[in-house]
Image (cartoon, rainbow, N blue to C red):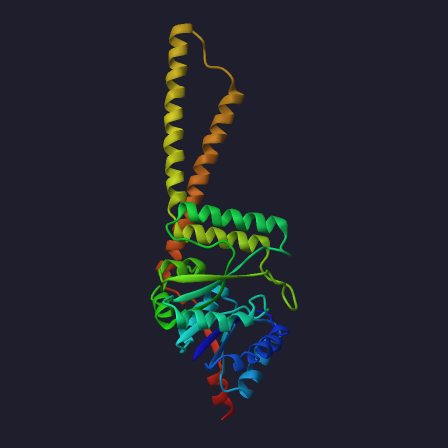
Length: 313
């Protein structure tokens, strides 16, 4: 059986189209499908549509959150609920080509790999500034982190049960799935495909959401920012010491009084900026630690298809 995890946030138009496309694959695969839709606090008719599909198809399950917890929480919930021998994660907007799934299944079953991932061959249709920063993010994270992340990699991947169980052992609150999938270390091969646009609607991932998401990825998988803050602090202290020696020597040898309050103000502001930057970096890591120590759940379930069946009975 293949468990198919589909996070949904305000996707009332996409869900029927996605489900129809996936059902067409049944004749090409000998596996049973287990659909697990995650309603991530949608405010439209997403939950209503999921209830209807689940009532009509025994292999359709859904998990509805009490509010929006984010895609990372939705992925985690889906992985926890999955029962299949193989597990895949897909976007409901059909940007992840369903027709690649048979090839992915064949690769896993005929080779010794544990995961088949997908990556975009290009970023056609994406805003240039977003593409630029996305490429720079992958270049940066691969330089400062021991966990390799593939440029253009999607969450769309097919994993063995063993790999999924290993990912579920990582119970951290601050989750960055692209890094977690790579960190567990199983053998992965990638399939490239041409970038696709959403079938309907608009993405909820703004530039700033993606930027903050990338910052989380860096903080979660690298200590380099902390090292940089330490190096900057040490360099500033050393430069200040040299500056003090220079001023004292100049005053003793040349009777040249220290003058120029504008330069002094500039230096003070510069050093203050470095301090605030360093404190900000440290604060980001402390914030992550703070959230982890609270031991809050990654998500809260309000309703599942089983709850709906019980109410009807």
